[in-house]
Structures are given as structure tokens and as C-alpha cells.
Image (cartoon, rainbow, N blue to C red; front, side, top):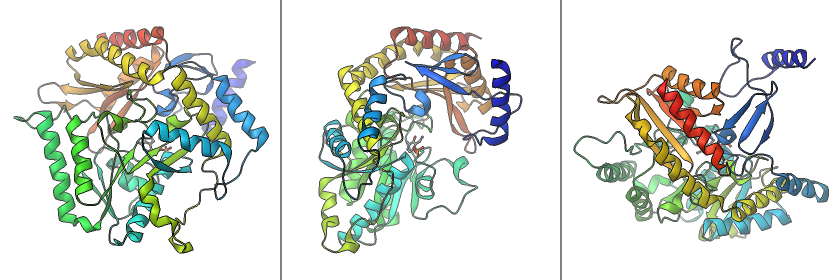
Length: 448
Ligand code: PMP
């Protein structure tokens, strides 16, 4: 029977599966997701949930897009795989399309995951400086609370203690500075003043480290997984200026912010900056297949054109830019264009924000932050002291939402004491009814 089949699956899951991040807990059956459509996912027991996290910040166009499956299948029949030492049609077409989306002039190196895209960026940055006559530039500056990946380099760039301290030593040469947070501005300052002071402290750090040793600054335009921090507009521009002043490469991690999540093609486009390197993954295929990319300004490619083989970028990624994933990604971007999902993200995000804003009257809701369809709801024990809510309290809210059929997440750093932000990033394609369900559920949960 169905029930026996399901119970066997749970037993085998317990026995064989190593779930990401959380251990198997007997008292809490895992969600075994079997089907998905639109913004909704359904488990093997037939329970459906609105996926307010779009998978893991991926499924921007929603589930159940036959055209995307067809695009991948078509390519698999025609030519399933060839590595990018040579070239292939969907790779070429996608890199051109990405340039339109980036509104710049970039060369694209493909890989499979956000972590790899960032590793690639670090290696390109170091080698670029090497061949540009500044071999001493090897350090990277990133920000506390950021997440940049799970590999030794991208994890070194990450600014969350809980993810790092058991795996050290990580790659050396990564230095962290504070990211401004609109909710925790020192008293007597405006958010803009505090933001510019944080940028100034970043400049100080660069000077203490000596600029001639710094290869790049890497940041997400908006910190997402670390608690949804929306910068003051003047901050991002200031960081770019500082990078330019000292010949440091400005690297933007758009793994989550990219592809419409925040209401622009890419997050940096809110701030009138032009990053030297842009990394992307997740939303590039809406999660349907693995694919990632590192976009590098054309002029940075010059030193790699050398006649000397040893001056080439000595970096290969077997599956990077898989033809089926590239063909599917093109379709994904075409859907976003045809359905104007970037605009939808901006407008629906603003509308949702307005509707959930009254939650800030709740004694435990410290601050709501939002850009497009990226949301953070920071919970506190006490609004006067702003003492962060316990990770248990935040977890309880996540569980309450789930029991009402809405998947959201909690984010932050348990070691540093900030694991207190509810995060939400629903598919850009969700319906108006879906949006209404989200608002209703959040309101109910905070009335309980
Ligand atoms: N950068 C950011 C901002 C991310 O959120 C993530 C993943 N959550 C990564 C990089 C790493 O991506 P992946 O898990 O595909 O390696």
C-alpha cells in the first residue's frame, strides 16, 4: 500500500541519506518532496506547501515549466555533453544573453555551483594581478554575516562563524569587515552616516593590510542568507569607489540577488555600480539544472590572452557550462523576459511589504527588510534592547508557518548570537492568490 511504501522510504532515508545542514530526527519525519507546480511543492503524503523559499532561493520562474524541460531534452538529444575547452552553441548564446542582462561587457566562465563561481573569481582575480605586474595582491576582503559558499576559499570569504570554526584552517588571505545593518545603527547616527562609516572602516582595513596586497572585495549587494541586510544606496557606490581608488577588483556575488530576486536583473543595478566580476548560480536555471557563471569585465581578460601557455587561466571545470543546463538557462531567461518577472518582483514585493508592514507592531518583530521578493523579518526578545530572539523562537515561527502550509526559513549565525531573522523569497511567478496566502499566514502566525 501507499502507506507501507512511504514508511519504507522514511526508513531508508534515515538509513542512507545525509541531509544538508540538519541531522535526521526520528521524531520529525523529513519532507520527501515528490512533485511541484507553480509556487507549490507536494510531499509523498500528498501535503502541499507554498514554497516561500523557492527551493533554496532558486526557482524564480516557478515549478512545472514544460518549456524548460523541453529545452534541456532537445539539447540532450542533439549533443548531451562537451567540455568548454572547445565551445558549444548554447554556451555561446547564453553568454551573449547574460551580457544583455548584465548591461555591460563581460566574458563568461561557466561552472556548476555558486561556491565554484566564487572560487573561480578568486583565482581569476589573483592571476589577473599577477600578470598585470602586481603579484603581491592576494588578499580578499568580505563582510561579516555573508555567505559565499562551502569550499575552503568561498567558506574563508564567508563571514559566519558557525559554518567555519570546525573546519579551520581555511584558505588564508581572507579578511572581514562589518556590513552596515539598518536596524543596528549606533545611536546618534543615521543609517547613511553609519553606512559611510562602515565603508570608511573598510578603507582603513585596506590601508592597514596595505592596498598592494589586496586583490579584491567580494560582497553580495544585499546580504541574503546572513539575515537580509539591505544597504543604504550610498554604501555600495562608496565601496566601488574605494576599490577603484586602490586598484582592487570589485566582485559581486549575485548567486541569490541575481535574476530578478530583488526587482532588478542583478542586485548591483539598484546602485549604479559596475562590478569588475559578477558571480551567479541558482536563479540562472531557476534551479532546474546545476549551472553557475563568473562574469569578468572584458579588459581583465587581456593578460590571459598571452602567447605563453602558463599565462592562460589554468582552470578547467568538466561539467561547467553543461550544454543542457545552458539551453535550459536561455529558456529560463526568455520566460522572465516574456512574463516581465523582474518588474513583477519589484511591484509585488513592494505590495507584500506594505501588507506585512503592520507586523512590526508585534512585540517580537524588530524590523522588516525587503527588496523585490527578498524578505527578512528580524525577531527580538525586547524591542528596546534589540536583544536577538533565540534561535528556538525563530524556529517555532518557521514551524508554525509550515503547519499552515507556508515554507519560510530562518537565517543568521548561532555562534555570533544572530540567528534571529525569518527569511522569505517566493517564486517571482507566484500568483496574486499565493501572495494573499503568504500575508494571511504570516499575520495568523504573529497573532498566535
Ligand atoms: N553565494 C551566495 C550568496 C549563496 O547564497 C550561496 C548558496 N546559498 C553560494 C554563494 C554558494 O552556492 P552553492 O550552494 O551553489 O555552492
